[in-house]
Image 1 (cartoon, rainbow, N blue to C red):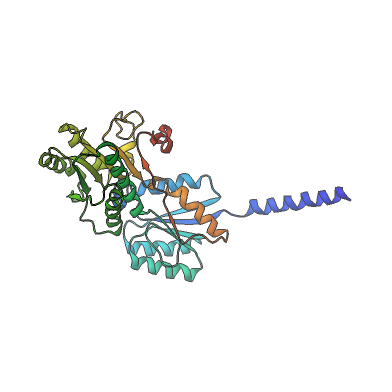
Image 2 (cartoon, rainbow, N blue to C red):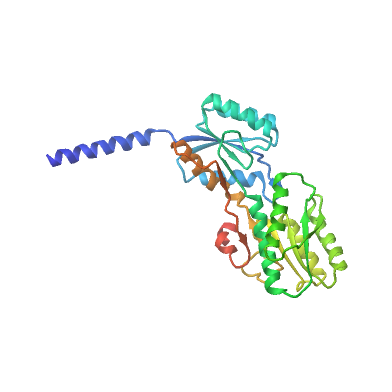
Length: 331
C-alpha cells in the first residue's frame, strides 16, 4: 500500500516537473532609455550600453527571455517600442524612459493589453519603480566630507566646494546637491558650498578648482563633485597645486572612470590609499539588471512588490572597493 502511494507521489512529481520544463520562460521586454555607449546617463559616467549589458548578464541566470528595445532618448519611439512589446507578447515590460507624457501613454497601452510594467529610474503611472535615491546619495557624500573635517581639521578654516553641471535642472541633480549640503551640515552646521558650474564639461573642474584654491590659500577644502570625471580633474588640480594636505574630494557615481579599467593608476583602488578622493557614492547602474529582473519575476509570480525600491547606495573608497568591485569584475 505504502509502495503504491510512493509510486503515485513520484509519478505526480515527475508529471509536475515535466509540465514545468515544458512551460516557456517568462518573456520580459526591456525598453532602455538608450543603448548608446556614450557615458552621461542621469548625469553620471554610465552609459545605456552599461545598463543593457547588466540585463544581458543577469538574464543568463534566470528563467527569462529578455527582448530588448532601444528608446534612443525619443519619447515617440518609446511609445512605439511599447506597442512592439505588446506585439511580441511580452509578459512584462521594464520601461526606462524619462518623458512623463510618453510614460503615461505607455501605461495606458500596457494596461489595455493586460501587461504589467516595472518602471526604471523614472516613474510610469501605476507601475512599481526601481531607481536611485539621489537625496540619500548626496547625503552620504556630504556626511563623509563633514566627518573627515571634524576628525582631521577640528580647528581649521573649512570651506565647501561643489563642482558639476549645476545648471542641470533635473530633480536628480537638485536632490544630490541638497543631500550633499544636508549631509555635511550634520557635522559642520552652517557650512555652505561654493558652486563651480562646469556646464556639463567635467574637464573644466581642473582650472576652476585651481582658481578657487589660489583665492583660498589658507583654507581646508571639502570638495563634492557631481560626477567621477569631474572628481578626477579636480584631483589633478589639487596635485598640480600641491594642496594634497588641504583638500579632500567625494564624488557621485562610482563609474569605471574612477575605479575600473586596465590602467595602472586607478583613483579608487586598494593600493591607492593616499588619494585625496576619499570615495565615490555607488549608483550601481552597471548592475541594474541584477536588481530589476528579480523584482519583475516576483511580479509575474503574483507577489505584491513595494511601490518604490531604491538603490542601496554606499560610499566606496580604497578600503572597500575590492569588496564591491573585485578585480576580476573590473578587468
